[in-house]
Amino acid sequence: MEPTRPAVSGREPVLNVPAVILALILAFVAVHVLFWMILPEREATAFLLRFAFIPARYDPAAIPSGILPGGSGADIWTFVTYAFLHADFSHLFFNSVWLLAFGSPVARRFGTQRFLVFFAATAAAGAALHLAVHPGDFVPVVGASAAISGAMAAALRFVFHGGGPLGLLRPGLDGGSYAVPAQPLRENLRDSRVLLFVAVWFGVNIVFGVGGIGVQEEGQTVAWIAHIGGFAAGLLLFPMFDPVGRD
Image (cartoon, rainbow, N blue to C red; front, side, top):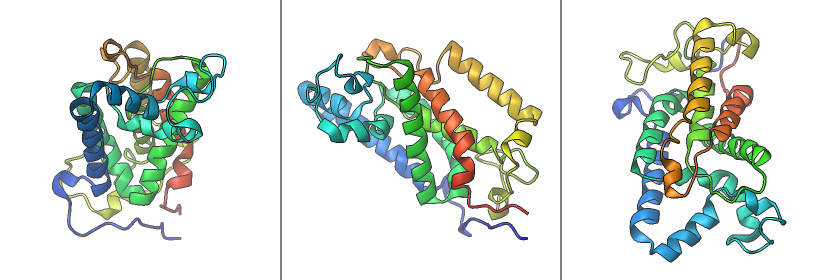
């Protein structure tokens, strides 16, 4: 049986970057400019409280219901919207670089709609795990690192296979590079390259936290627990989003 192949344009975008990745980065930049440069301090604080992920929002003993802006709607949308807020320019820059590197192959394989849902799902998974580990925490969680971690995990499911894409700027890539059938997870985790990447990734997150160095000085946090939640979701949810069939 022929594997289903994702739709791939005959023309390569600039730097081999899918439009959805560029759109997300532009959204990150727009929110960053609005939050840090345009909104007055009081409105910026309200914006942060409305769109950042704050575990205390879900604990009536910590914060009475209705105190934080956004109401019941924010109880839902902040599981995703926190990913569009960044603590400073370096946080924004490095998350954008990681999204370019790891989101691009996944977006090409999934297509725009699947990738956006996948981005939201892994961001929500990261927030959910952070909430489970830090219930009642008042510190806002910001940054796209959990969703980017999900993209890293999804990329591991196919980039190392024969014929798969191995780099953002690899010359001569065609649609077939993104249509390599993925192995089952148990087989994928037997690949020494995958195991090495996972080991290094977890080590870096536990010791430093991807993108988290210095962020707490701004009164916010990018939690490594959320990164692990996004990464685990990326590994496990990959088959639900993958349009490529298996032989």
